[in-house]
Length: 416
Image (tube, rainbow, N blue to C red):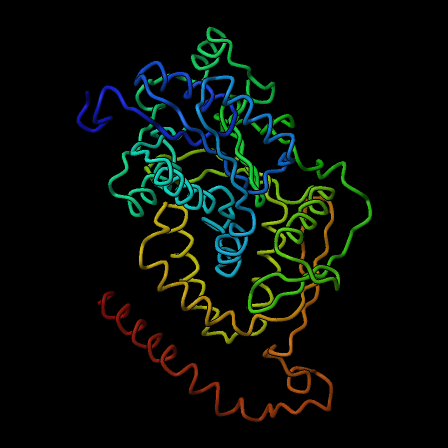
């Protein structure tokens, strides 16, 4: 065995993080055949769009039909929203200014739950369906080993080295059912977004075809009349929609539904993966983009210029840590302490206009807003004393003027 791979050639029990898709279904059989092990399976309910009781029952039945000895389905929606999505919103978490971490922030939670199940069942080995090229392997492995250093993590997709085309053949040879949508693209879904990869999407010079989308209306086909929604925030967390208080799961689902109707949140970009590769990524993240955009606008309204400037640096670093799989790193806790302090005053409402793929903030209101109409107005009644500019501007521009004069002297000396 490769020293960097599995430690043993056989195991008594393995816990497999199981989605019911092509990769993990092939994996279930492969782990049985390769390691002669009893396979336990675990599916996390993070609010997937398909996530109704019948769908999860289908996943469970499929696991048992493929030979799993025990299956767990765990509802993690509430904790996912409160402890992972809400912090992402407060950090304005858009990786490289574009991707709202929908898949990224779900992985640590899945890893932590896998550790709980493994310890309950006396399992010392867990397996997942991540490749050696992506970010999810870091997010899961790092979290699992931090919470349970004694647990070994297997990555079958590295060991078997099968491409997606070979996986499909493997599944057909062993009578493993393949859902139609899984034949072409590799997808991941949760309450905060959907990703799609593989096939034609691996060619960045080609526009993503419409069949790579499942949730949202094409912007061209969206309603010809804009829709306005108002999101209420309390200490940075979204707590209400259009004047109605809602729990986090319900609010995100409702914003998601409205956003999909208007073609909001379709993303494709060249992403810098933690592993060092550039990768063409595609997402559908309507609720994430709408809520983060609204939050950022309200936060900007209630914070000073200096707070906003520094927090943008903190947000970027927090987002990079979350994206890179360093959820357990103490720096994230430290950055989050600052983020939470700033968000104590991010309370108010934001009005967003949704129209043919665009979400535009058009109004905001907060009792903590750093805005004074009497100072800002250009009407005669303004209380702002413009005469102060006579003293302010010479002082404010002093160093710039002096620096410019020095630069001109240097240029003249160089000419001599």
